[in-house]
Amino acid sequence: MQFGKFVNRIGTEISYSRFEGKEVNEYNLTITTAPGKKLGDQIVEIRESFEGFLTQYKLQRKNILFQRIFASDISNQAEELKAISFCSAVSYVQQPPLNDAKILTWIMLLQDVNSNPINQKEGENEVVFTHNGYSHGFHTQMSCPQQGDSYLQTKAILKDYISWLKKGNQSLAGNCLRTWIYVRDIDNNYRGMVKARNEVFAIEGLTPSTHFIASTGIEGQSASISALVTIDAYSIGGLETGQINYLEALENLNPTHEYGVAFERGTAIDYGDRRHIFISGTASIDCKGNILYLNDVGKQTERVLDNINALLHQAEADMGDVNSMIVYLRDRADTLFVENYLVENFPNIPTILVLAPVCRSGWLIEIECTAIKAIVNPRFRNF
Figure (spheres, rainbow, N blue to C red):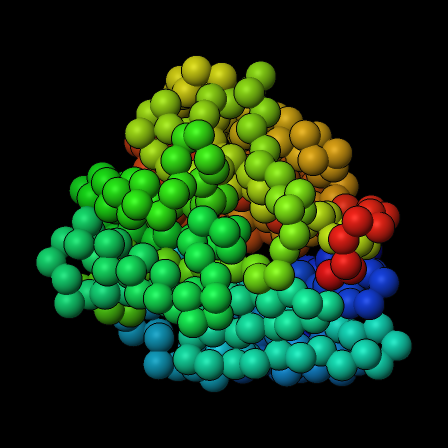
């Protein structure tokens, strides 16, 4: 993994990771503007910074796999954010950046090696990348605001997503590897989302005895004030038996179904030349599901990262393989401590720090990450 970070002449920071593969390279980058500027100026700065990055590293906008824009006031900003929506699978979420900028963005970008073409198709809120018999699909901004509550909205969203998967001869249980679920007013609407997800998963064959899906369920708002739940999802078609492994780290964490929710702590996918690892939103808990270190964000941060390390180790990886990280804080007042801790311990990882209450009030911090580890596995096709 290669890392880079620089601040350009207009004060915008670009932090990126680069994984070199046999046939496809992968970039993860975050672009963060300086605080104290108008929205229009920040939009211009992100656009110019990104275009400069593409030129410098000989990358192409058409090979963006996924983008998320974090905003401080999505209802008022959504229309203008289209100017920095660089692909179809773009996700907008109100989770205010904790550097006090109005917006920041996270982008996953591919690069072909030796001029091998990347086959990428875009549709409404979707990008599908096909290569070596695999089909990678990002589907974003799924919502059903016309339904009455978070339970009904979640059921409707998952029904629509299952229909989308079926069009590609895929299924929720067999092909969906990662979801991000944003819940408006999480303290009141989380329970309805969980109930609906549990019911749909049971019907689709996702149970404690089979497996679930790596996920983050967190406070977040879309531009529609009626949308209580919004979901982004990632699926893979063309996988063979044995390519997916689910991470538990039971010495650190308990199975999620023990406290009534249905998601995997982490998921690893093996290819011939790399292992992708998706670590779900992770909090400060022990192997029995108890919250550790109430009201101590420092100890909670350390425990969260201990838990993430345990999951990564199960996939034969470590924090050096992490190529992107999102940190969610419940209390803005904890920003400086967490920011300093991350800079001291993980200065290279492209990291996003946003305000977003977690689903249990005792959790002051939640962290998710992705990682890529170089492997050689002749059983499977390269990514």
